[in-house]
Image (tube, rainbow, N blue to C red; front, side):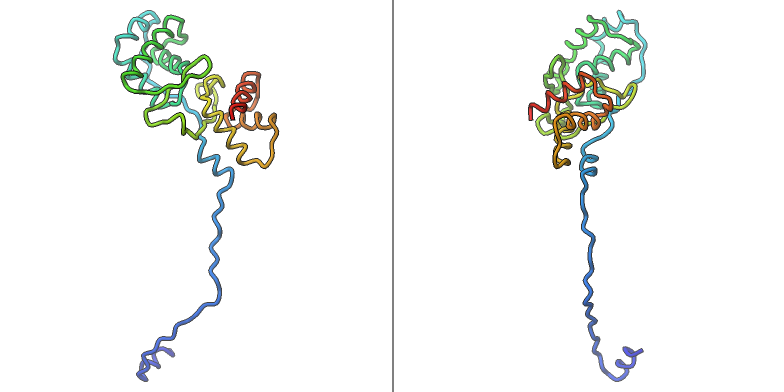
Length: 212
């Protein structure tokens, strides 16, 4: 009403209103748990439609069948970084072969080597196996790790890429003010999905700690 009356009097002044109170914007804090969540995910195995083959028939088709190569690519693209052992297991299972014998394993390994050279797919050596990577992944800058699940989504610790184990260890070190080696092994194991630390889990995590 005051503003209208002023206009009627020919006073075209609009007074500014000043606020002395400060507007406080809450500070956004990133917690340690949020940082870990950004770098971790649950490990999930690929589920391929099964083409049932007898073991001998599968063995004879590995070298020549283009479908085998396509399935290799699907496995690597979905699960990489992935161990050679798991590629063999996934591929054999997708043909209804529950257990890959030595001849099947050797044939798949040869097929993998030729396929990777042809398609410029990277791999890194790790103890008794190889770790295969997608073209878009760089083993030197990879900073994620995946939590092992149950049944088909569970990985033997020997099949977990060393880079994932190291990344889990680094996350624990970065979020703890002080932690001893025994607790570090235990917490890293939990992050990777191993609530019970057996001999292999302990020794492999401890081995990676020594590389840092």
